[in-house]
Length: 378
Length: 242
Image 1 (cartoon, rainbow over the protein chains, first blue to last red):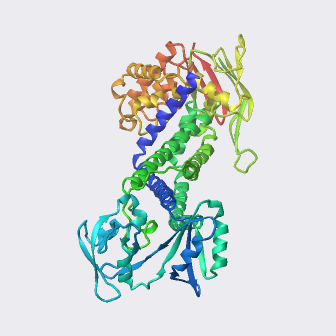
Image 2: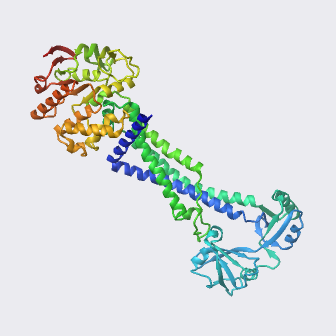
């Protein structure tokens, strides 16, 4: 047992020494390999963390949102709907909501304008997302104008700025009073944007939704589970786009690695011959080459994954942010909570480390099974 | 003792460029002697040494190792002779590693690593502790007066130094038989004489030394015990000086 361990250690020691003497070749290979691991690992970390973040935020969303459609387009909901829907058995609360979008021609950004039921927010005051504050260079107490439908601008004072913890959802948000909202958009009285419905029992939600449709055929009830599914799909779609680009990178790496690994140089062939002639078995040579490949690929994998972790969870993934986070020009700035998906990491490991190590072993096996007397004649 | 019975080696058998390197060679090589195989290029010297050294198998014939403690797991106690030609590759490697030390014409050292590592290489796969192997390697390098080069890369050494490194490497597993193929081909006369002095020293330690050479400094040396003359894959004459 001890001899077997010593044998492995000795061969590993020689493998490291072999890697060191082909420093330039191995470092360039390691650098490319590292990049190939770093990019998909960053993507995996990022999308997993983002989905988790979205799921947490959506868990606070209403059980059911009721919209109204006219000719397939969303229209305003008469407030009377809320009173009728509140009467359906199983419904515990119906909250009419006012919200909309505001295009800021000054910086080309779209803000989400919402109203607050919180009576502590006074008319002329606003709570803003950090993205809005950043783009308008505002802090608490700053005054800012919004162009209102009535031509006279609506002047608002920043009362608070949302913490970066809620940045994913609130980065582009401005929360104002219903009165200011109506003044800003000249919003018709007695109408709301949609209704947030809460049910006592989540299992009754499909039945409640069916009853709402039956009462108001022009209504569209959206369940929370459907919203969660939509968000997941959006992030999956975005990550799929990036993954497609990465797949091309990965493919070129595999071709590169295959080319590098399968073509043994004359020097390497000679060395294998020498090792065999001085008493190394074929299995010893293969073990040596396995360790050489494993050292490169495991180093690339571990360093690549660690760098990806720092890239995503400490630096908020600057490489992917534009493609994955934003739905407006105000990209959220926030620190993602680390999420590690072991399954995805194992898949990444299997798709990168295993093919490379195999690509190294096969040609060496061919060279190592030839008669060692070729070394004698070289 | 090494005994060869009707050993034939044919390359590219059955093809238009078939070539017989050894033709029914029958020979006895006595232990603890210096045996030189003399002959022009293509006479079959190197092929013969590769067969004896378990690097290749003969096409036909048999080779026996007698009185040599070959590292074979199945070897029964008291059985003196091992017939090596029919052994599987694994056992041939085990014998090659434990019984033979090789000194190649081109030295066949590995560039880019140190002199010490080159010497230690054959022992890496035996599973012996690296500290022991290192101590033995350093002692061998000191014995051949190249201890000061232990940490140097081999490509920085002169021809004579390279050969001494190759000899140290051949001895690292303490083999009973040393095989040297044209060992003086790249050495001047002074270095060749130094090499022969080392060979005499190896013999005095109780090792058998088999040398293939067409250098008069080797085959005319008063140090050798037997001379086997070869031509066209056959033994032309075999003389013993003891």
